[in-house]
Length: 163
Image (cartoon, rainbow, N blue to C red; front, side, top):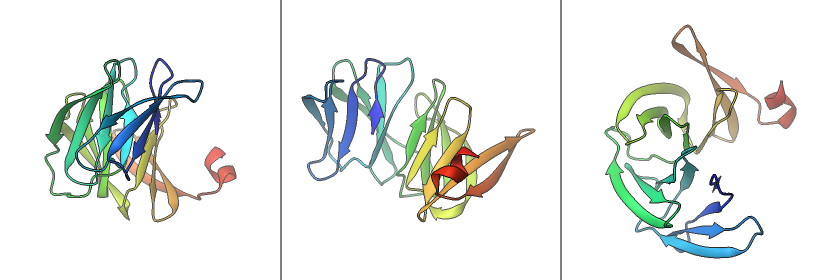
């Protein structure tokens, strides 16, 4: 699920292989057909672009103004199961088995964060520059200290996440 800068809600529909688009009044606008089943979606802030994962090595861009699919690329990795995705205005972060891949806006791999968990289902990056990921029914947070990536697990309860 993602929200565009003009408040369109984008939902991945794995059953019918498309991304559903709703306006801010919760009215269905259209759908964007995907060939594989979409797993997760992110909107790149201040851009007219969303990016979808499929649970394979590919990601696909969507033009959120035209509501049409764009370029599909294969992420250069040994990981064959990329699922969770999030973004900043400068980077795309994609989760796979035990790794989070940091990509540039064009989808080129820049770096890798090794994670404690086996399969990363979803990723979230918030404005306070914190990166969270969901794996094995737990929420984890990635800390960065003096250029090093340090991993810290937090409980999946709301009160623990707010701490």
